[in-house]
Image (cartoon, rainbow, N blue to C red; front, side, top):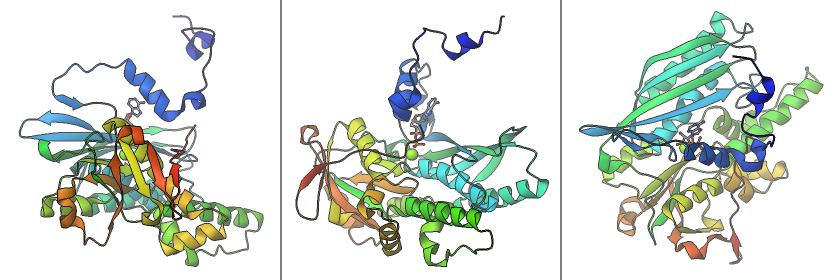
Length: 353
Ligand code: ADP
Ligand code: MG
């Protein structure tokens, strides 16, 4: 076959569409149109936090995430152990978002010759710490060379009873919208790490002052998937009507729930959980804390909806916040501000393109 670069770049026509024109989600939708499901065991394919596969007595859930040096992490401030831990945690978070329990992972890495055996061991000490923390087995992977730094791709498999699975599509009118933990910290932490990196590059004798920002930098460098909440759901007998993890920002995730569930969204600004250090650091950086909470990425908290009958079971939980309710689709996706004004939510999200 003749090798024709022009053909590879665009085999269909002379037109060219930039990926940034349609965005990450637009691209996934486009690819999904050409994909058809052939096997009845595929209960859910593309379009949720993980695929759902019939496995007889229970179902398996399957998800994969790719982390690329220079795009998802910067080794000038992210220790390799933390990168390893985070690579596992972000996958576990997607398993949690299906209300399932993670069981196995495979780990694939590509390494440039910048990396020594000791560096890979450091990466794996983080991967193994996460595997112990979440009770999962590392069952395989792939290792290859890279021309551009470090790449880590992890695939995770989890298990659940079929009736326990929480899809993005199950939210019903008047369900209560809940979110765990607090929001915006990972974005604010990233801004601090970037700022201190620039200070260091300008003057390598300066020691970065990170103590004051310990919470937000930890939110960025070492997120913990909320498996604790999934185990509590089991204990309390609660199955969320819908769920998603907050990886791209709360507003973007609310849009996913609204679209998949054909629902409207009403949330309240004064109910958004923001940690004190996140709030103060955002203000110091000249950022609006509410915008950070709505559009900051990588918090890896859980956003879910519950039937009103389950409210009493979760009401006293110290780490679950009730931020709004599901409305009719024609009521739109709105936030009631502290002054009582109703504003349209915008899903700015965490753009990679
Ligand atoms: P999450 O943020 O929960 O990891 P994504 O936004 O990355 O989810 O993906 C949304 C859905 O699209 C998932 O079902 C995912 O498996 C699927 N997906 C993402 N990229 C691709 C791709 N290149 N080919 C097929 N499916 C994809
Ligand atoms: Mg997700």
